[in-house]
Length: 233
Image (cartoon, rainbow, N blue to C red; front, side):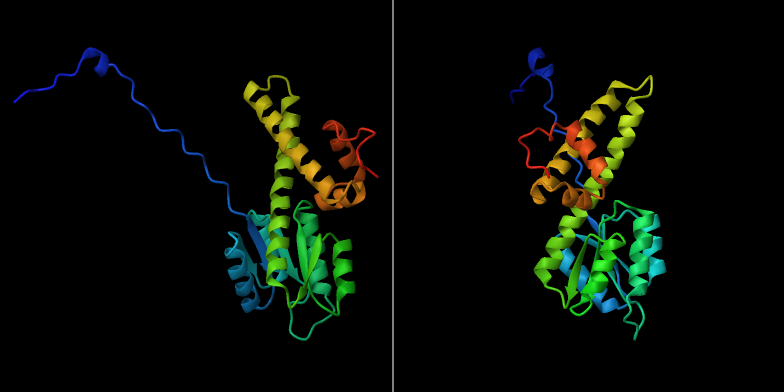
């Protein structure tokens, strides 16, 4: 039997390594606060069909605890948490407390068709949108996905602010500077998308981003989006 000997060149041939596996992005998580467990389950099934994760809470206290201890990118809040109560005050208070806890958390409220006034009051207290009951499945999914994506992006903008502050400190590393540049690109795209959705209206874009008009103007200037030809008003 003939034995094949490996040549020195073959022995020294470098092995081809597999490309590194890129980490998957964390799934978007939505807090659903409603006293009816069947409503939470229905929303969970709907959002799961679109790849979203649901964290349920049946009381305002549970919802606040979830927001304090877990990462959630958006919240869906009912306005009434006790049978027979229709004032919406519990839900309005929860919206205000969630907004106070995390101003970057996009909140959508659930309301019956005849309580639009309550929904508008919820938006005054910090909610970003409202869904009417019985809700349309497609609109519910689309709204919560867009709000959760916004919430995740706003968190990354907050990271950016921290990175910028760290880069200003003497002794900041080249790696941290690179991270700042990368996150600035994220911020620029977020601001650009918000302005496009608002059709150039700074007030609407600022509300969508959870920023003041002056804060949004500073970001627009930072990314060169305030030239005379831009549709800003």
